[in-house]
Length: 90
Image 1 (cartoon, rainbow, N blue to C red):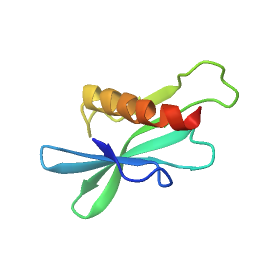
Image 2: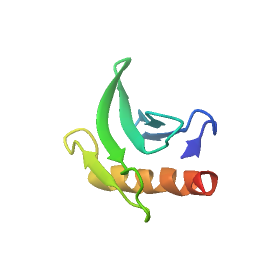
Image 3: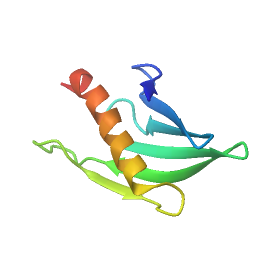
Image 4: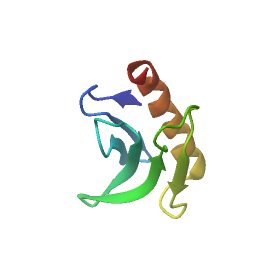
């Protein structure tokens, strides 16, 4: 998995010939991310990560649609995106 650009905050990967993309919903706060799957030319939301405002420790809530993506794939790629953004966020 690789990050496209530090300003876009998106990470893409391919699994079983299906493209997935983690994107930040708000690039200024970097607290809410969504995992989308490209399916027949349209994006389908399969997971979402949210971190609370003012949280002193790292962590948040990850909601996954298990019918659309494997839970392990969603969790591990979310961790990879958070680790890549961690040095930038402080």
